[in-house]
Each structure stands twice: as structure tokens, then as C-alpha cells.
Image (cartoon, rainbow, N blue to C red; front, top):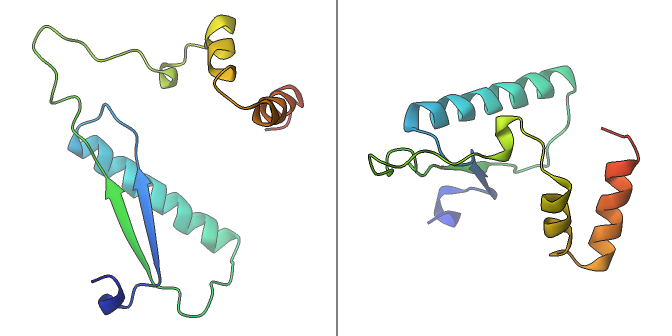
Length: 110
């Protein structure tokens, strides 16, 4: 079906989770506004035939809470992870990725 519509590329975006539909929609709109502004400020030539199908994924996790539940604390809340939490995640990575991540985190580059 995608081929029949002439789409050359499929791009999937996911806003994250723990949002309601209006929040997710606003985040997608903000993302694409920013992308459009960036393209206007820094024009880039797109390949011939570029005709993307853009898919936004939304899951209504805030709606699915039981009345006695609360939303989880997530990294985006502004709280920095503890050294133990960082180490726990690092242990899940292969040695090469650990080394690369460590060098990026300690280089001071944005």
C-alpha cells in the first residue's frame, strides 16, 4: 500500500509516553514546526523523489492508570540519575559502546 501511494520513505516518530492525546499532538506539532524552522534557516537539498510518509505513535498511558495509581517519576522530571543508576545502565552495554558513551559524557561537548 505504501508503494502504491508513491511514498519513498517511512519515518516513525514517537513522542514518548505518559501523555494524553492533546499533549502528544502538541509535541508533534512543535517538533515539526522546529524541523521546518531549521530547514528554513539551514536549507538542505533533499534527494530526488523524496516523498515521506510520516507516522506518529501515541499511546494513552496517562488514561490507563487506575484511580489509586500515580504516574511514574521519569528522567525528564529534571532529577539527575544517581551514580548507581548510571552504572546499572552502563553494565547493559557492550564494552565498545561503554567506552564511546564514557568519552562522550566526559568530553564536555554538547
